[in-house]
Image (cartoon, rainbow, N blue to C red; front, side):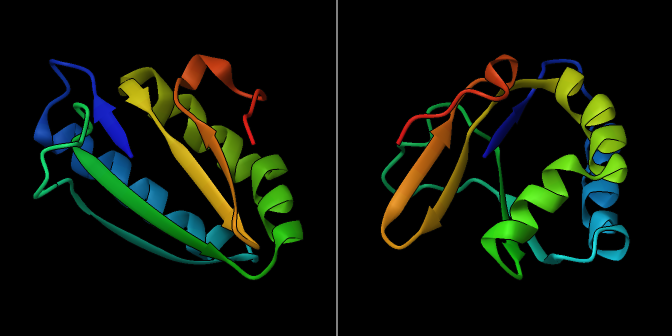
Length: 109
């Protein structure tokens, strides 16, 4: 989930999302990207405005994606435009969450 910084235009947001979606073509283990705006019925979105679901071929594929140069180039453009970011990686009922883009490399389990 992401919340873009105030002042980030809809055009900029759409371009960043298109760049994210293009990673499917550049990073082999990344299989799909589904995206949309946050529409929580329970109003528990905590300010997040966009939701992204990415599917990888394996857990090892996530590691490959994380280290891929195309991902690094994308992150340099994407992260400075975010007020906050939350990732959740799930496998075998385990959840790892990262709530702040500046906490890269730290995780909770």
